[in-house]
Structure formats: structure tokens, C-alpha cells
Image 1 (tube, rainbow, N blue to C red):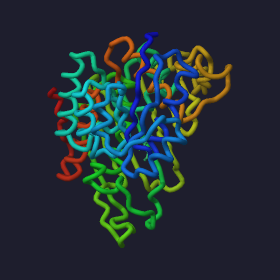
Image 2: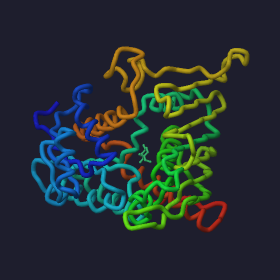
Image 3: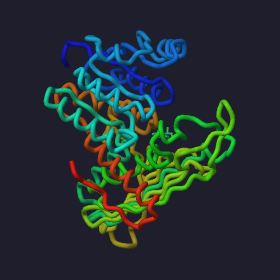
Length: 380
Ligand code: SOE
């Protein structure tokens, strides 16, 4: 690995900022990656960000992201700020020559995502890399599922079902936050969690959504804010069906009001020669059915994806020692750093993030127009 240490700035210190900080802190303890320095954590509240920086291993804290991205000792900018800030920060950072990792979804609107993608393309010609953080690509069981599908173990995939179910908004008294306002979050369950499911469908199968239809629903239309009740302007639940390249169909359900479901990303893939099922709540397991076996021997086999032979697992503990949700962020940063080091474009790229954004927008348009099908625009 090269001598120069890569200086990292992380923008945002709440839930995602904490998850990314943990990954920056431990990635080099487990993986052979270029040396990094956790230089500066950026947030709006000076005291709170200083406290978070000290706790999460950052050398300094700051409140002005603009001056941070201009610093010569910063080489990587990791954006965990709310969606409405992604475009401005990412474009400025790329133009300043910094490699950029940005949380999903890429942006709140297609226009923002297109501008970010154009900036990423221009930066790539100067050796500056960018990636969007669909971290579930780095769940070992899902990386393995992708390998099995690519190896043809499922034959031709015909049908994918995905559901991302949470219940943190089941309670009508749960307070307002930036995640519940269209101007800050873009959309609700759709952008926040259906985006993961849509990315997985396309990533696992290698196919792209062509057509979409959707239904969105806000069950709780007002929630308590600091100054009284406020309107919720995003969806609580999204349903969508898709037609994809490869003559494949898929469905997604995403809900923040699915009482009893905590953080359940469920994926089922059905092919001519086999099937796979996965649930994030048991993320070390992948269920595989081999339909090429005699019928009397078929049945879903539970594979514990904990062996050194499995993706990412040789870096962690001896066989059978399970890993968790936070490890996906460490894997994401490992892959990002290796791409930066080798000068190759990391995936998911901003182009892939833009494609997911187009699908989200098609679902929203279909839901708003109560039209059954909207063709997803694949231009650019
Ligand atoms: C909140 O709904 C959230 O943290 C998402 O923003 C994440 O992307 C998902 O991984 C878990 O749920």
C-alpha cells in the first residue's frame, strides 16, 4: 500500500454518521487497506459535533463543510448529512478533487442526482472516485447470493420479491423529523428503505427496471413537532411492482408502520433451477434451494455464511462466529478504499444511484397519477 495517509472528513454525526465512523475506525484493523486518518467530523451544532468527534475517533470537529473540503489534508469526503444536502456537498467535494462516498439514496430528486452524476463523471477523468452507500450489497450472504445467481445456480431468474419492513412510525405520537418532510428527505419509506430493496433486485440479478407501478400511503398525516402538530409530507408505506430487462418481474413493499417488524429486509429470488431467500434480521444466513436435485431431495438449505470461504469473512473471526449490521459499513469502506487505491471506479457508482432514483421517481409518478405503468427513463 502507498505511503500517503488518506485524510477523511465525515459530514453528519447522527445515526449514519455514527455507523460510518465506526467503520472508518475499525476497517484497517481487519482489512488490508490504504492507511487513513480520521481527520474531521462536521456538523451544525459545534458542541454536539465536538463531543461526537471525541467519542468516534475523529481528530477534530468543524461546523463549516465548505472550508473542510478545501483543505489539502482531506482526500476523502464521506457524506452522511440528510438527503437535501447531498448534491451541493458532493458536487463541491468532487470539484475540489476529493473522493466522495455518499449515503443512499443518492439525492432527493432526479435533477440533483443527474447533476451529481455529471460531476462524478467529470471527476473520474481526473482520477477522483465516487460511490453511493447501498451498504446491503456488502452483507456477505447477499454478496454470496449474487455470486450464486451469476454462476447460474438459479437458472433463469423470473421473479423477485422484496420487502423492507420497519415499525418505528407505527405510533402516531412518534415525533416529526427531517425524515418526514419532503423538502429534506425527498420521500419516506420509498427513498429511505424501498431504495435498498430496488438496489438489491438490480444488483443481485444484474437486470434493470424498465417499468414500474406504485402505490404510496401516509397513514399518519400529522405528527408532533417542537412547536405543535406538523404535516407529514412523505409516505409511510410504498408498494411497487416492476418489469425488468431479462423478462423478469419483481415486487417491493416498504413500510415504516409494519407493527412488530423492526428492520426486516426480506428478499426472495426464484429461478428456473433454484431459489434463494434472505432476511436481514438473520443476516448470517442464506436459504438456497437447488431445483436440479431430484424432487425428493429438494428443500431449502440454510447456509450459515460464516466460513472464511464466504465474501469478506476471512477478515473477521474463526468459522461460525457471526457478524452484524455494522460490519456492512466496514465492508463498504474497505471496497471504497481499495477502489480509490487502485484507481478503479467503485460500485455502486453515482450512475447506479441515479438509476435507482429514476425507479423511485417512476413509482412516485405512478402512485400520484394512479396509472398502472410508468416507463422508467434509462437515458444517461
Ligand atoms: C432508517 O429507516 C434506516 O436507518 C435507513 O435510513 C437505513 O438506510 C437502513 O439501513 C435502516 O433504516
